[in-house]
Image (tube, rainbow over all chains, first blue to last red; front, side, top):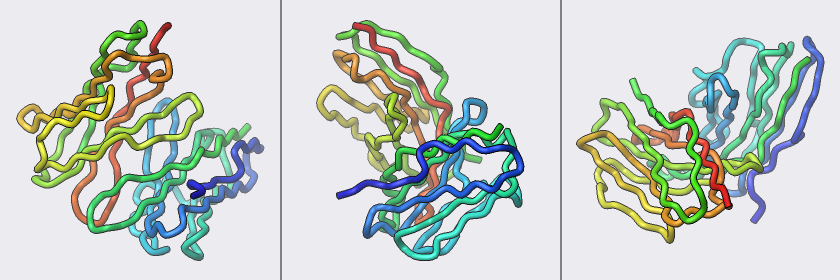
Length: 115
Length: 115
């Protein structure tokens, strides 16, 4: 089975530009998570969805960040406008919600560099 | 508030040595879940183990073993006879019970195993 798929793997953009990160969860999984990893702050949960519905977006840094999950097999994380401090590795993860916290399967990540 | 502390930032050992990675957590919940993830140089996080707060039995999986001690709020991870392929960043994480799946990660411990 294919794992979690993220695209692009690397993104370099200039400050002020819009950035869209994409994620395809594992088929059959009904929970999806977006994380950000930086040296300073470590791994932070940005937002997660259950059955395509955003449940907790308290980790989203500010209004420049938005996430959508239009269907069970696709999610996007958008940053508009991007800033240098957004440079990080962004991970998408999915899991099967079974009434208790289950293992999350992580994608390979998108390394974002904003210059 | 929930918190995970991995006090060891970096550990370096020589191949075949045993090594223990420490994890201390804080939570006021009586039911919770603990996890360990491995992040090899390729970057993708890999699930290693999940343990719920009612199961204090130690677990062994090949060269890996986990020691859960509720009395000291610790969930330590030991690698026996370490190998170069064990070189990675290891994360301990905490989750509340229920349907959230939200993980609180420690800062990670970088393990370097030298040949």
